[in-house]
Image 1 (cartoon, one colour):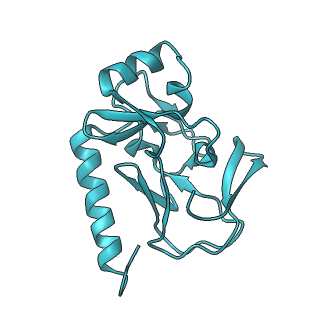
Image 2 (cartoon, rainbow, N blue to C red):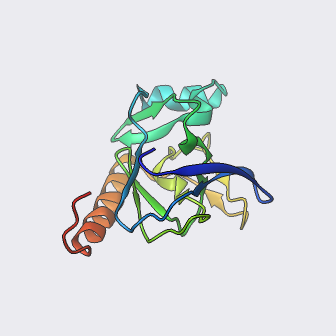
Length: 159
């Protein structure tokens, strides 16, 4: 983590990750790739289908047909899903989409992190809506466009 955070118990879905300091929009919050292992999408899907740990608990789309997993003790493993997330993940780099205050929950859109198969489907804890991953191309295009728009909108962005 590149910002101060804290893991806390919630009533919605067990534990969650919260900002422990103000985080400005556009700040790089963490990298899911540092110290992680890389695997192919096919192997990731097999591991999820077989409920193999730590892949099932920590696996996320990296770029293209590659996924990362590992870092079981990393606080970012407690980032929950939201269809209106506070964070954006692009190729493993996680950036704040808006200004965050201490106590704000850190959330990601899991559609950018999981595969497209029936194996990787989640249900949103708040709405019950199905969360199905986007394919590699769609994920890369959506997150790249969102990241470019975010950085372009911040005068003097330096990371």
